[in-house]
Length: 418
Ligand SMILES: NC(=O)c1ccc[n+]([C@@H]2O[C@H](COP(=O)([O-])OP(=O)(O)OC[C@H]3O[C@@H](n4cnc5c(N)ncnc54)[C@H](O)[C@@H]3O)[C@@H](O)[C@H]2O)c1
Image (tube, rainbow, N blue to C red; front, side, top):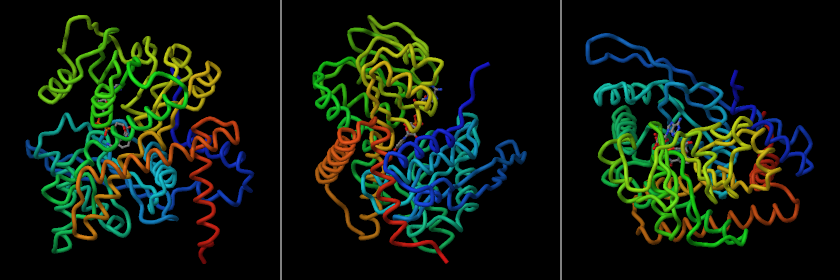
């Protein structure tokens, strides 16, 4: 039977190793093991056929030590509270790695959005927003898009929250459409961050900075933009996949054509091009390539398939794509992993820019946004790299050490209430 992985246990294991490397006392980081607040809600919806269905939703706030909580909302039929708790904790560490004045949170609704009509999706979103309303807000907790949620859904959240307060409050969510206070550059930010960090690590490892063979799992917001920008940087995207399956072309896939097809048909299913053959998601993980960029869901690389990985480098676009036991196997094979809390932090960086613009009621130019994002990603990569070199640890443990060090110092200054 396949082993089941609990992402929260994964998070706790990495937290322990990083805390030990930092020489912390257990009492220094005890609070980081527990989310500050977990809310579970029921979401009753009138379906289009007149029946009533009740969905389950969650919002978890892991830490507000460094500022208001921040984190996406995911719609997925298999989501559970441990996944949301892990995702919330990763947000805390991610914001600390890139030095944002935010804590971490995450939300989810247990639903397959593909099985809802557009009107049902809107009703689920508005009722979920009403249910979590007491704990969200621009100064408390600011949601954003994640798996299966997008700018349209963020717009419904912003509208519901604003209607219930009686005036427009754009700063309650990020990742909105530009017309209602979204930021230029936000839609591409996570993938842009992934591509910036990929270029940095290629340089550090002495690998070619153009023309490397890259496999991207998941072609949604993060994977689609990562593939586009890495292709524009002159790399060969040899493999891609989504929930419907994947494609492999050793000569490099036609990324603009692939993206146009997905834009029209929602998935890769039915796409073909000369020289490409169909592969499964499992085959993509083990395909012949230099760099593997998982951008779908957690626990895609596990002890069951880690030995098959041929890439020399993994850049984690998704949150938690590599299980802890897979990390050990990959590290023994000499494979470098740039961890999620660094590699995919570009999204929350530009979400922060969006929130700041909303609060200040002004807008920034796109080149200014992209240039500041690049500066932050390159600086954070450099800080993590310093720790890798000084302590001879993996990039994952180094990124956690950077984050935990900041959080523990801040916690000491704030003290424990009462
Ligand atoms: N959206 C953001 O700004 C952001 C920021 C940081 C991290 N992330 C993380 O990146 C990952 C992807 O998020 P997204 O926003 O791009 O979501 P998305 O819904 O836009 O895209 C998800 C993609 O993964 C594919 N997928 C789903 N299940 C799969 C499976 N079992 N095998 C292969 N492919 C599968 C989907 O078909 C789709 O192409 C998640 O782990 C998310 O938490 C997202």
